[in-house]
Length: 171
Image 1 (cartoon, rainbow, N blue to C red):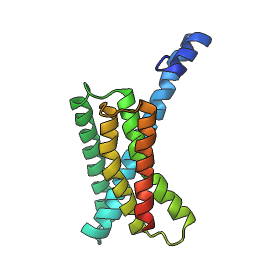
Image 2: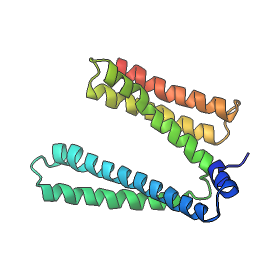
Image 3: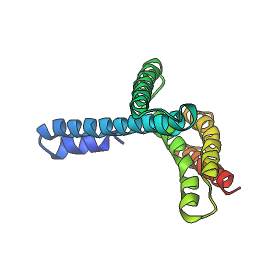
């Protein structure tokens, strides 16, 4: 089966100029996602960590400056990491790893929404516990150190990545 089904469908059933439009839309969606992640990280650092714990009396100007430093730092780090790992990363590896890591928020989020006794510390502990399990499991699943097929392995990894934070948060 083709890897990029949507691109193949666009090429086969629509005029050729729509492929360019499709590419532009894909780049717009990707840049929007990256932008949102960078802004989110900058806010978490500047407001929740720097402004609350490191320098509680920081001015708005100092908080914005800290956010800019984090944005540039994370972007440079991501670029260097992608450059160094370009021979090892593929779409499947990134998809599986991102799925395992992103799934760690599911359990704590469900508990936070539906169980009144869930505390912010429990959610953080649950997500961190899930990450401790999901990152090695995601790497393990991506490098073929398993007997199960890809689909079964990722079900297992995501199940563990959801279950560990759920149990940790509930305790």
